[in-house]
Length: 128
Image (cartoon, rainbow, N blue to C red):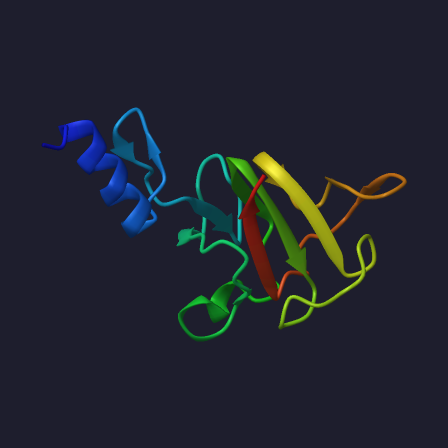
């Protein structure tokens, strides 16, 4: 009556899971370090929830105003903010980074590089 592929397609449509080559995508994470990235020092892996503001409070409070290095997953763009609540002006109290390893003392700004070392209090990420 129904093929396996058709049932799988309906399942994916109902559940809303993205599928690549028949396998669900693994959740994305960023790595944030209060020290060096290589070798890792004071690093923690944080799950990325698309478009959700992550305040560096509670269990992440040790990173508040302490992030020196980050790893943003490929295919994502993350904005890092100097204030809680993911509010700010780009290049003043916000930097926007795409996938890769970043030293926060030398990140791209609008006109030149910016020193955002030890300034982050919140961040948000989303797929590109």
